[in-house]
Length: 290
Image (cartoon, rainbow, N blue to C red; front, side, top):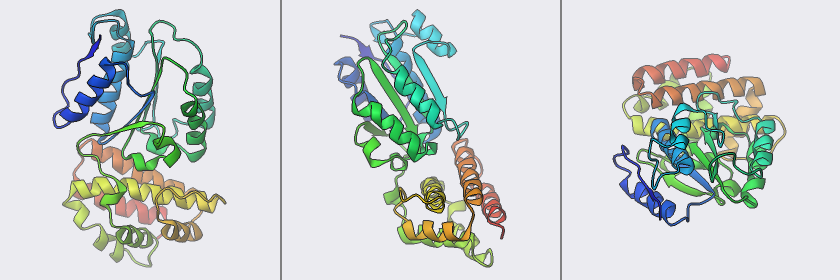
């Protein structure tokens, strides 16, 4: 029986233990969602991808041809799309190509891996396209999805994957819905006082900031969907999203969403919270034309 060797993820020992046991017993789910800080979740996904194409007894061994190619980013059986680096990395055509390719046998390894980073930036249309292969997964295929929070994904996608929350992961339940409604309204308020007041605590609390940003991103995405005539609401803040959608164009909403995503990436890189919040407030107000 093969074993999984994963190190360097302090504070997540129980998750590593679960993954190692499932991997060793051949019970690893066909789709895994890793939620948490970008650096940790993406690093773990990369290590799991390498382990999946490794030919050693203890995986990843780091020295077999599969490991060498995986580390170099050139393994033919590992496809990576990085939505953290490029929020537009998941167009519907790309997901359809993945869906078709998944049913083709691996080139060299026993498993074909699709590592999709930052799937909080994947549209509902693309998620539904991905869902089709999740519902009837082919053999010897592993999907590794990473995200700030699994709540950014459709419930149907989440239900067909195994979710692991790395230390530092925060979900929508950590954020008061009433606070999010006020925050959304403050973006388009007559003056900037409301927004500055509501975000004052975020400058001093990175954990709260890390929880608020993905939720704000979901509200803005929902607003853009509603503005375009859609009905899906992933944030649970339909009234706040509808208010934003009524007052701002779809282009402005997507611009604001981009600002929030930039702030998330900066926070993952350990940016100064006070400076980050100040810049974000200014950019949100400017993007909303206020």
